[in-house]
Amino acid sequence: MVEVKKRVVNLKMFIDGEWKDAENQDTRPVINPANGEVISYAPEGTAADARAAIYAARRAFEEGVWSGISAQERASYLLKIADKIEDYADELTQLETMDNGKPLREAGFDVGDAAACFRYYAGLITKPDGQTYHVADPMQAMVVREPVGVCGLIVPWNYPLLMSVWKIAPALAAGNTIVFKPSEVTPVTPKKLFEIFEEVGLPKGVANMVMGAGAVVGNEIASHPEVDMISFTGGTKTGKHIMKTAADTMKKVSLELGGKSPNIIFADADFETAVDYALFGIYAGSGQVCSAGSRILVEESIYDQFVARFVERAKQIQVGPGNASGTEMGPLVSQEHLEKVLSYIEIGKQEGAQIACGGKRIVGNGLEKGYFVEPTVFVNVNEEMRIVQEEIFGPVVVIQKFKGEEEAIKLANGTIYGLAGGVFTNNGAKGLRVIKKLRAGITWVNSYHPTYNEAPWGGYKQSGIGRSLGTFGLEEFQEIKQININLQVEPIGWFSN
Ligand code: NDP
Image (cartoon, rainbow, N blue to C red; front, top):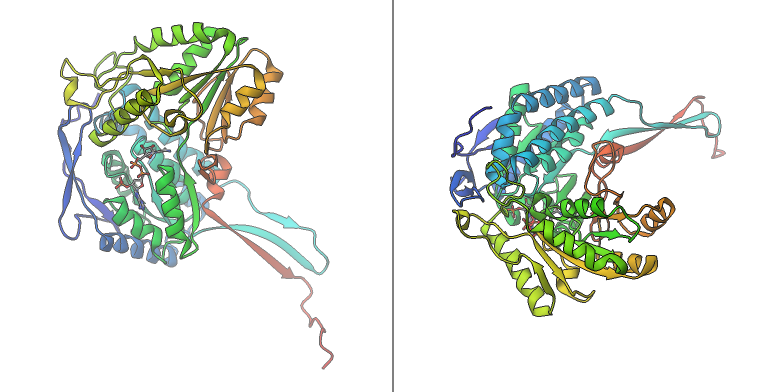
């Protein structure tokens, strides 16, 4: 295994094929959330830096150095990128753990998925697309797909590498040029990804990366008239702000936002399977997952038994640094986010909910230097509580009780969100019936969380607009052009003179 040092060389941005500091030389520290240590410094990019990246992407797009080459040529670059991600898998895995905090096991899955995502879009872009139409003679009508142009891609900190790839792979496959902004909290693996782009020789200006505050760099990307599309993943509040900002220049907007997803457990479910997936649904990624099953709804007759078993197992989860052997759940991503999650736990207590386990920051054995929170379970909750309605984005779950299908569906759909949901039952017809009533874009029956490059990812309601992954994820980054060809070239004769 490659040995990654505790400190990463200071980061730079990648603009028009060159590695750059911020124009004013400002930097900000990048912190390891497992111990609070500075692992690197990242450029604190400015609006001027963002504009330099936008102009480079625009020039590259207009010159056709990327959109003008064949799909097969673009695919060959994407395949090389996938190979390189695999070559650097050890390093990427360790860097992701160091920067985001997630256990090595989770980071390793993300790296494998990232390579597979590039391969998927390399394959897809060379497959047939478009349509032809049987319209009245002498016309022939057809549709072709074209790149949107310059795409602004803004990603959060919970899957620093994978969220980047979910946007970059289809955007590049479609022939767009990109201006990408990682989260300021987790820029380390995105930077490594751009080193790979340089290694495989992507033409200058095709892929640009700007670091800096969302309110400065992100805002410039969302508002600039030379950016044709904005694709954003992050919080719903930021998503609304970006949509409003992008409206002035009528950009195409694609948003993957927050969730408060229900996991419905019927009494006839396989009990241990349901408990197991429910634990995975909330505590994977320390609950910092947009699709987390953060509301578990359990049928009344098994409620007490379920809570007892869930709590028994939640207490046994091994929490620790992501790179320590045996760690099953890592820290939260930052001090700021730790404070947010702890404040929600206080809100829950004040609202009258009861803590069945957890509820505290973890101290002792050196963990007080990092941002660790116990796996937490709230019971005695009701629909009005903020901890039931709002996205906490941490290892905090509420377990609600329901009587029968109708109430389960009502509770499940009872938030502003509609990202994901799961149903556990051994009655196949009931499972499908309930899933069909869920107002959510990603659902599972007798499972929770598996995600596939082949299948679309995104939400209903305030969980977003548009889809990532699969064929839908490619279409987000394409324009559709209608072409009508006159097969009999002679005057139409509409006017008599
Ligand atoms: P944000 O939504 O604020 O940030 C996500 C990305 O957007 C970051 O790159 C951020 O930059 C950027 N950004 C922030 N403000 C703007 C802006 N005005 N214009 C353009 N880009 C902007 O997420 P946070 O990190 O602040 O987390 C807040 C909450 O959002 C979490 O607690 C969680 O509830 C939710 N969230 C949901 C995610 C999901 O996958 N659904 C992922 C992450 C967060 P910068 O890093 O500089 O702030």
